[in-house]
Each structure stands twice: as C-alpha cells, then as structure tokens.
Image (cartoon, rainbow, N blue to C red; front, top):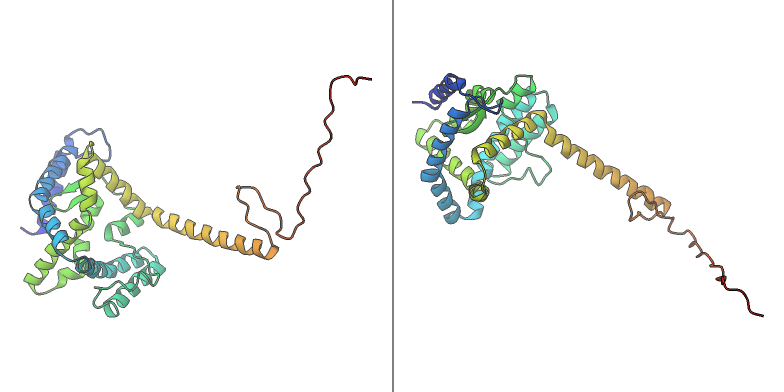
Length: 284
C-alpha cells in the first residue's frame, strides 16, 4: 500500500471517529489520534529510536552534519517555490540562491555555505502556503508513521511529496535508502529532546499536540520572522543612538531613562553643607 493511500485511509478513519467527544475543540478526533500516537510511539521505541541512537553513536559528527545539510539543501528548492506562491519574493529568491550556492560551492549541499553568508533558511511547505491564502488548519490529526498534522496539512502532503526532489530519483533502491537515512538522521537530531520529554511527568500526547499547533500557527503567520525583524530594527536603532552619543560626546547612561552628561562637561560641584546648628541654648 502506498503512503498516499495509507494517509487517505487514516484521514477517513479519523473523520468516522469524529463522534468521540473531546475537551479540546481543536482535537475532536482525540480518541483516534491517541491510538495513532500509541502506534507511532511503539514503532519509534522498537525500531526508529534504536536505529537513531546507533547512528548518532557510530557515525562521525561531520558525516551527520553532511547528511543533514544534503537533504536540507534539497528542501530549499521547494521552500523557494512556496515562498513565491505566498508572494514573498525576497524570501523565495533567498531560498533559491541558497540551493544554487550550496549545490555548487557546497558540494551538492553537503556543506552549508549559504547560512554563514547571511542567507537564512525558511522551510516553507504547501500547508503554510494554503494557510497564507486563508485556508483554515482544521482539526488536529495524528498520522500513522508521519506524526502530527492537521486536516489542511494532510491535504497538502501529496504536493509536498511531489515537491521533495528526492522522491524524483529514478533508482528505487537509492531513493528508498535515502528516505530511510533521512528519517533516521532527523530522529537522531532530536534524541536529547525526546529523552527529556519521556522523563518528564506529563501527558506527552498533549504536549506534542499543543506544541505542534502553536508552532504551525507561528509559521503560517510568520510571527517568528516578525520577532527577528523587530530585533534587527532594535539593533540598528541602538547603533544609531550610540553614534549620536559618540558625536555629541555623551556617555551611555547605565540606568534606563537616565541620560549621562557630556564627556567634556565640567563636574558638578558638590553641595556645600551648612554648619550644624545645635538646638541647645548657648551658655554664657
């Protein structure tokens, strides 16, 4: 059975189980989702996590970095297309340039030359593009093997599969090996975080669900980019203020809201205290 058919069956099963009540309106299929979460967790504990642990312990760090960079470079091409589809021309050109630079100077993407050069990675997908154009996310949906999603993001998966350059590799053994390697590498990159999550005394299902929904909302609304832009603007303002102070000879105040006096200003003389007057009567 193909992945697309499995996803279609999973979504259909989730919709059929929608009659189950849930305290969270964003998760009306909680009963089905928890069952899929348990299934995915069992697969992870049995196969994926041991493979990722062995991969991380045996594979040299520079090889792991190269594998991560290689598949990340391929994703920049689809990210560029989605940025253009969202009318973000500058980000789209940035991601396409990242792909071009890393594919050539970076030895087919094994080396990440673009990031140190100031070209930020964006990771846009079709689900975010649909959200940009006003399509609501719909209820939360836990997919078998693929993990957290929503109805909108699940509907966008066939497009994301097609946009993944690795899926167009004609050699089937190479293609399947690459898919497995990428999955193991991605799992290895979050081993420490998952171990902490497993040790914490909390509902892991709710934690993952709420974190995923919040993160996806942030990516669709670009709130993370707005924070980055605000920080950059504040840094520029601080530099301008420092230059103005330097030209005026004014030292930066240590206390907020307190402006220091010019560096060449004469020191303020200390107030002369008047002699103490005794309240006792003067004896003649």
